[in-house]
Image (cartoon, rainbow, N blue to C red; front, side):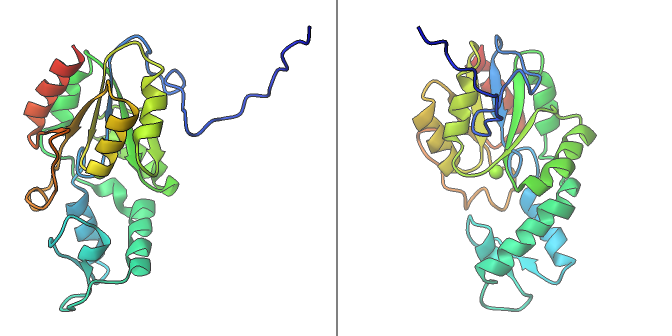
Length: 223
Ligand SMILES: [Mg+2]
């Protein structure tokens, strides 16, 4: 009988290990987004682009379509918007203000669950984003990802025996998680006051914009 061939271990970016992130696999797991959930992205990004001669208008629940040259009727084109976005993540994202109540809510959840920060941001943001979590006393386990968050969340939640919850501002990520991990409780949170009336909601996910209430709802879902 042939021996199974030992394959060299290779890092699998689609399924990072909870243990390698320092997270226990026998406790509840709460996965939390950064931009517009833990951090006031639009406010921080708006201030950062203003220093570079642009302005952010709150006209729709979108990013690049809200970036303008002052006085212009047309928003900047996609390439220009993307360049600003990438520069911000490489150099400016450490200055975000935490969303009101977020730090305290996660501090209260910490004894009850493992907390993992899952942020769709360019890899160049890793150092600044990690330092930002540390600076504000937020949980340090961080994954930077891209694309709909369902597949990576499924790979992560499959590693734990505890109950799981997921928080994001974007319905595309929430729907993706609901499809790939139906047992995971999903919550929508939109931190920015100006974005709240623009952000679409869905009956599939509880929408809770107050972090104190959200923390309690998460705790109830994972208990
Ligand atoms: Mg977000």
